[in-house]
Amino acid sequence: MPEPLTATAINCSLSAKGRKSSTDAMIAVLAEHFAKHDVVVGKPIRIAAHDVKWGVSSDEGEGDAWPQIREQILASDILIFGTPIWMGQPSSVAKLVLERMDAFLDETDEAGRMPSYSKVAVAAVVGNEDGAHHVCAELFQSLNDTGWTIPAVAGCYWVGEAMGSVDFKDLEHRPRMITKTASMVASNAAHLARLLKRSPYPG
Image (cartoon, rainbow, N blue to C red; front, side, top):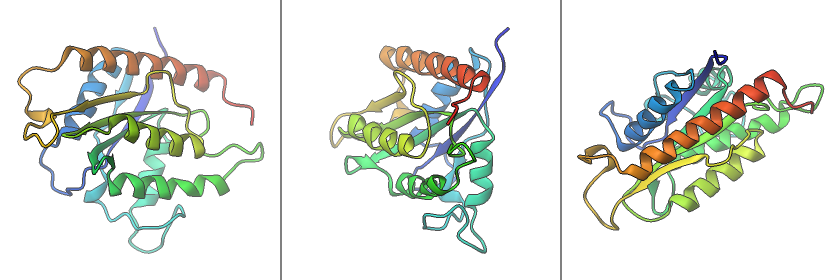
């Protein structure tokens, strides 16, 4: 039986409200496939619903919600980074999270390893315009810079018609390629996370 793993999912939607978003829906698709590989995905953290301060340190002082979220992220083997596409880019909330992770560069252990070393990150991206590849490129470059490991086929995304009005969460039928890609993302990420958990980077 495969070694159990855990994953933390973050939702970088702009809205702090609890109503289900298309980013939630895409995270749920990945969670469904991760479960087949004995990966337990916790309840997604909607970043905008927390008082995460702007900055580039791991603790921006009184009232900053980031330290607790950071702890939860780093306690898991896999990070599912969910973001909508806005103006062809990751949301401003996603960029806030990436900027807060910049602190990892100065938080290395005696072997020079950042706290995110030997942990895997994948992306869940949705939007009603083009830009999914660009968004994944921005996310993966930033995540790799801050110590995360990106597996083969690490992005699961959906984009609707330009200027369209249909959201991913409102689709009557899930596109076949979304299911196929989600399956591959979960399989590759779980496989890589298990390898790194058994044999972490030496630094």
